[in-house]
Structure formats: structure tokens, C-alpha cells
Amino acid sequence: MSSESQIDAVFKALAHPRRRQILDQLRDKPQTTGALCETFFDMDRCTVMQHLRVLEDADLVIVKREGRERWNYLNSLPIKAISDRWIGEYAAHAVRLLDRLKSDLDQ
Image 1 (tube, rainbow, N blue to C red):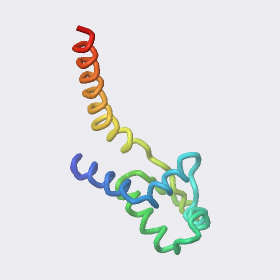
Image 2: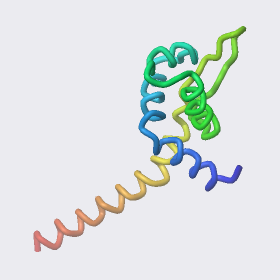
Image 3: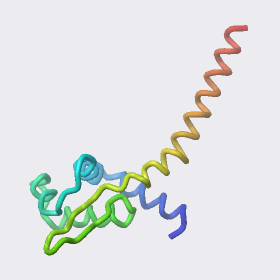
């Protein structure tokens, strides 16, 4: 998968509020799919699995099988890559603009 298509997959995965909630649940500790289904009791297991699949395809969730259990681990590296590429770059640009504005106002 190319870098751009990987970034697109991450943005697609993060676009849905339920998937962001799933990532929030995995932030502190890995969880089994069953535990996630209990947390999101208003969704059926198939829907939770579909969301997990999108997150896994975007490399935001890493799955480890132990017997019959499927453990889901957060992989925050794709989010960091987006932050480094997009947020950091744009934030630096905004800071430069504000610095220039401040300099202009001080003159």
C-alpha cells in the first residue's frame, strides 16, 4: 500500500465517531473483541467487528489471537505520522504567520 493510500485509510478510519470511541477504549489497555462488544452494547457483534476491520486495515489496531480470544491493541504510530505530516507542518506555518504579524504590529 502506498503512503498516500495508507494515510487515506487512516483518515477514513478516524472519520467515524464509533471508531474513534473504539480507539479511545484501546488507549489505556488492549481489549478482547468480546469486551469491546460489551462496552458498545448498542451495536451488535458484527458491527463492532466491521469497525475493527476498518481500524485494522488502517493499521490503527493490531490483532493478536490467543486461543479463541482476539486481542485488539492500539497502534498510535499512524496517528503520529499524520500529526507529523499535517498538524505539525501547519501549526509551524501558523506560528510563523503570528510571529510576522506580531513583528509588523510592534513596528
